[in-house]
Image (cartoon, rainbow, N blue to C red; front, side, top):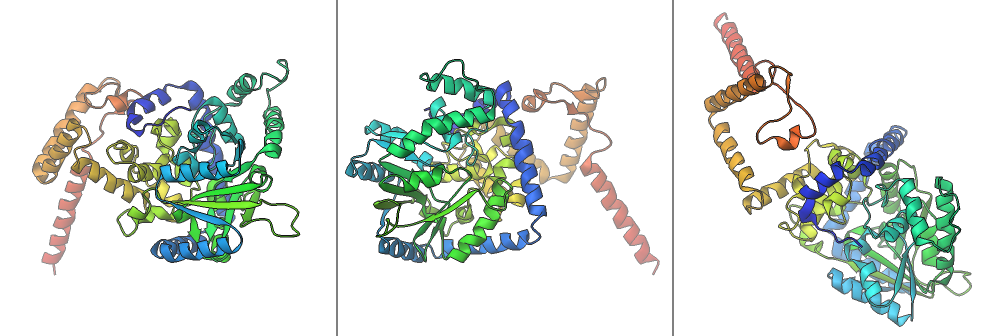
Length: 485
């Protein structure tokens, strides 16, 4: 699988912008996801009230995480489950591998789980002699292609169906070479046929969890495919992998969060499958695992508690911020070089890894604020990104040219007369350089802009000059009125 490196974002982004196949695939992100959410929210008059309620639930849990974690452990173990608390990725990987070894497992089926991506589970299981098979269609496609997911809810959104057909032909050589794979239906049928045998022969099934309910010990799994249910119910052992912030207090609280999750993620009132599972099969039950383990991961999250980034722990991984981000829509997920992408990933990755390694990601943002507007948990993502930018600047992790430019801007901003004078000179230079075409196709220090679009020449006196004139006019009018009293 292609290794991830968030430090390469600038080069990755340039490559992504030049990738015609990727650009064609990203059209769906800019249209389908956004349109579906808009329609779903418009059809839910109480959506803003649900956002407030859901955010309050998650805020309360974060403030009382230890108590709800203890309550969940007690409830899960009362139903025959075993809960494992893992401080970091290495501990979680080895815990899961040890469970698989204890079961004598060879084949492991997996539902979509970003936490298992975070800990690098698949390569580790393979190194230990196990065969992990992703059963979510998108995850199955990217696994066959040797790629990481490019989106947290649509792992293969960067791939067109023609590319999927090529991948299936290479990965399934035992099937007739002349078969028709030109339609979505044909591709789906082939994946279903390939995965059916894996479901039936798997020794262990691993899933993620959208929520963990403290009062019942249940894990809530939300999918639009039946693979999640087959993964957790057919093998003799089921392993749930989740991070600590997935906890909610009660079933009613879970219902509140789920009502905003589906609408925010895919524009559905509810996903096709919402499954609650916990513990082992009880006497008289016709199905279910004989062993159930819940692996709960910290991996840097507890360090966020009580700090200036604590609000990020409310994230429910709906992907709404990603779907509405102009940066993601332009370069896709792989450009970020990280498991978590888009605005939420640009905050999480520096916190879960290191600010130095992920120093470019907080700057992969236009500060348009759309991510905060659509976030169902009302996380102030632009504010968090701005704080991370301040930290990268303070730690000298930005370029020397960038820091010099900020120092110059700060100096000018503290001297209004100089600021206005510099603005007039810059505007005059831009007008002079672009007087023929009315726009600039090249400009020093602005190559990142002019490489892909023209820079319009300034019109009029500019915002500062206009504001200054308006301020003086307003003050004069106010003074004249006072004198006439």
